[in-house]
Image 1 (cartoon, rainbow, N blue to C red):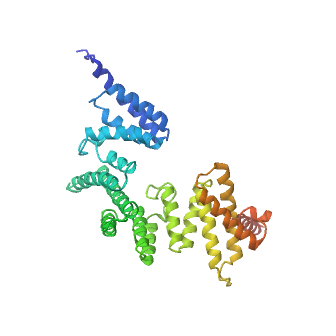
Image 2: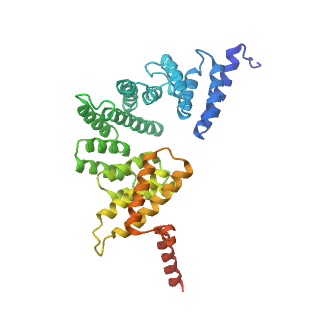
Image 3: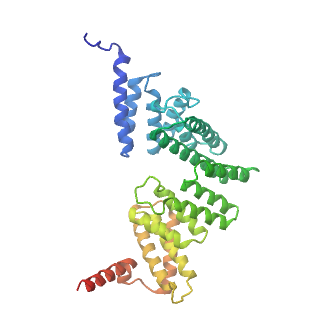
Length: 368
């Protein structure tokens, strides 16, 4: 019997919408959000209101427009997605689940309680999904991975709500108590999340419990310290930049420099990384005692000047927007130059290049 040819507009549009969304997803993964949005808009038109792929197209458009900075357009699409899947119970493969609620929390115009409400909506869905997978007597490897991802997501959501209570809602009477409860739950849900321990450290700093903050930061770094670049357990670049700031705030400058040097090996055009490295070594110089086993103030400040000088050059080349960062870097450079004098040509080559050349010479001598 010959196959029946699909009839009608819907029969033709569904496969077309599905293929368009596949292409759009590939564009998103490649960071091409502009073309991803164009493809997803076409898919939305093809599937139509109430179509099988409407929810998936709306979700993808929400993400693409957020990345493009078109927040109002993203909000419109995501609110429509919420109308379709208000409880997040539909299959995630078709656009169901918590993501739309979490994105709406991040782009909330009102912030504060409105953001918290969206986050809590997403948290309810994640808790339900975790309970469903955990309740199975036997789980496949795919389900185990999904469970870990859900726990990571829930811990991230709880930490995001804690951040809101530390900023927008810090004036509320129960803000500190809510923060404490949220980070406690996050560490119980996913104790292997480095980001969670960073949030714990932020809360402890706000409570002026510096030793506890140091302990939380060390525990978070233990998660990924020995992992290679590219491992999914290594926090994202911006998260580690924030980590360096926190380490500096609790006077863990050596650990901060380790983080910053690793970041620089991944991206040597990050203005903020060069700035923080320069600032951190400036602080180390001010603390230097000058003993035989200690780095002298001059050595630390020369290294600091190299980092800060590179920061200022990149700042100008990239027309970096954070003017306060640029002003502070320039101010530190002026202080260093006033004490050490002008920068020499050798110094401009970088504090580690001499070390590399020395090691090369040693190797040549050994070979000889």
